[in-house]
Length: 290
Image (cartoon, rainbow, N blue to C red; front, side, top):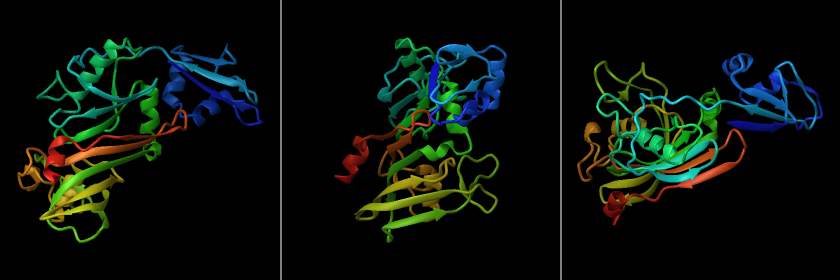
């Protein structure tokens, strides 16, 4: 793996501080000190004590990540929406689990992406999922293709580069055209279901009503926090459970919860480039609207 930056300032900078400014963690700096990777200034190898002159090019070289054999390979198909050196955006179908767990170790979205990377003869074959979805939620999922890219998202302000939008079919009449739900979410011990509770984690959900139905609505939803089952729990608490969401009291007019991650806006923290990805509404939700 290779990452390249340039000192665009007119000042001479300490290389270690320059790398920190670009998201290189203390843990990664320690690995570099121990010979796990290399640093170059204008293609000449240097140490962390070097100085970066104005307009100098800095290159960070990292070794390929070792395979994680505990993550099995699936060669089932996966729909690729976007790919570059560091990122992968895929469109997950409803019914496919995002990550391996006790009940499914062999064929989840992570297993399928690993199979895809193997077929592409990628340098790194360990997929790092960033925006996982519930099993029966469909739509866009972002992966990092290496741990450095993943670490940039996992930093304190890294999530600000993401804007996730969903389309949902909810029951009941939605009176407001726009609203914000700020209610803490938690769960009782031994339960899967989340609920609004005072001792829960802060959770913020914003929504816009896109279409009124006879006894429901099509909503566009933006997550400002990423709590488990956040959308499902918030709207159930307000008396508007998602259609098909049996766990949260939704009517079974669809065979799964009517939730689709349809838009992902992503500002690449490595390049500063902004990407907007769209996934069309899946057939089951589209047919219901028709």
